[in-house]
Amino acid sequence: MKIKVMLVDDQTLVREGIKSLLSLAPELTVVAEAGDGMEVVDIISKHSPDIVLMDIRMPVMNGIEAVKAMHASHLENIPPVIMLTTFDDHQLVLQAIQAGAKGFLLKDVALERLVDAIVAVHRGETLIQPSLTQKVLTTLQNKKSDFESSAEPIPLSVKEVEILRLIAAGCSNREISEMMFKSEGTVKNQVSNVLDKLGVRDRTRAVLKAIELGFI
Image 1 (cartoon, rainbow, N blue to C red):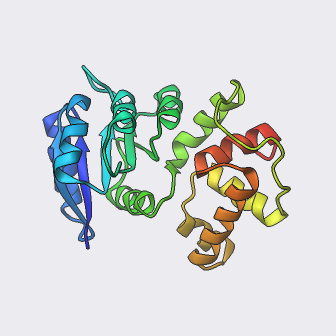
Image 2: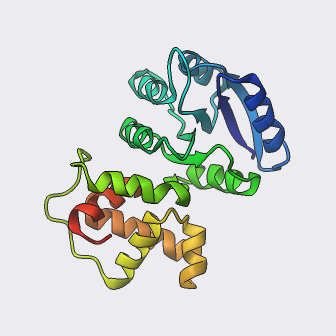
């Protein structure tokens, strides 16, 4: 079945452009659109999208506030959110991570990368585009994290640290499998082991914990 996508952007031309691009991907279908964060919760309840692709900067209610509203709502199934951002929005990316967003892409992302990101996040991965990662990590290294984590994480193997560094570089499981010459299923299991050992629930929090421990 196709992955159902909801688009949220206050600029109609941008939404139409993204919709036209996504129509070229046979595995995706756009089922709903919104011009403001205020509309998101109601539209999700009506159309049940699998993924929400949302601009981080919008008037009235921005993307971060919309994600918070989604998690504060009584929605039975809350779809993961991929934020569209600019290179200078890394501070907002941190706020969006804390709010619960699962993916971050620059607005000039290529169609292939956009489709890969939607598929990856739909599989349960958390993804930050590599060109954003270094700015985000630099900011994180200069501020105290308030993400939950275990007080005494289980030590990681050399291979697990290598995987963790690739995660921090913004690599998906598929990209990691290609770099390490492993099957994607093996990498997925190893990533899960890393999260368990660090006592965190997703890839972004794993990166934050790794910074605290001095792994990256």
